Amino acid sequence: MRPLINFKICDNSSECDAVSICPTGAIIWDSENKTLSVISEKCTGCRKCVSACPVGAIKFASTQEEEDRIKKEFEEEATRVGELFIDRYGAIPIGPNAGLKESEIDLNNISSGGLSVIELVDPKNIACLRASVPIKRLFEKDVYYLKAFSDGSGKLSKQFRIASFPALLIFKEKEFVGKIEGSYDIDNEADLQSAIKKIISA
Ligand code: SF4
Image 1 (cartoon, rainbow, N blue to C red):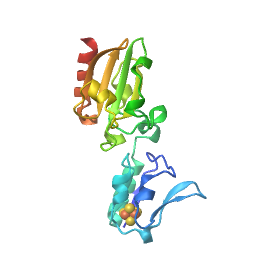
Image 2 (tube, rainbow, N blue to C red):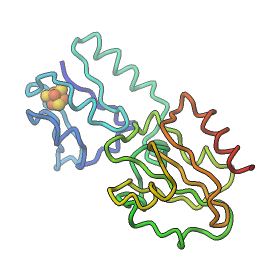
Image 3 (cartoon, protein in one colour):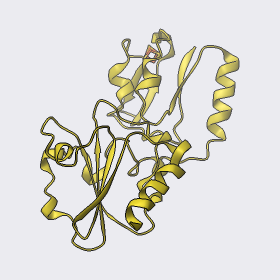
């Protein structure tokens, strides 16, 4: 029995949450080979690592049969890491937005031309990257896009009366035209797309 890592979708980083969450040090960052590694003998089968991975790259095998099945699943995996670590609705902020706080957003700085979208996520309720909808699939044209963690300031969440997170604030030429609130994932992506279309076309 041991956890298996799908390196097709794992960003294989020393910052891996599973390394810090594993109570026995069975998942380590092998600094010599620059890769995550599993020491099966140390694993107690608690599965904390499985839920610690934001992209679902860690699966647990308790039998040889399960291990074979999971390895086959990984071989057939079509998704690639580059497709996962992009801006996705409700998921962890990526790239220049990583770590931005709601209180740091100045609406005066949003784009005066075209569409601007500000996404607010609750740090306590982050969606799995794999199940969340890529922002680029929600808007036909490139939009000015910012993503931030909602923080205690309530600077924007109060101003726009946001009742549930994640949320999208949509602006046309700096004018607020509507908002989306609550969870949507790839299973109800079409509902999210039509809700956005309704706001933009109004
Ligand atoms: S199942 Fe538990 S003990 Fe085993 S590697 Fe994962 S977190 Fe560590």
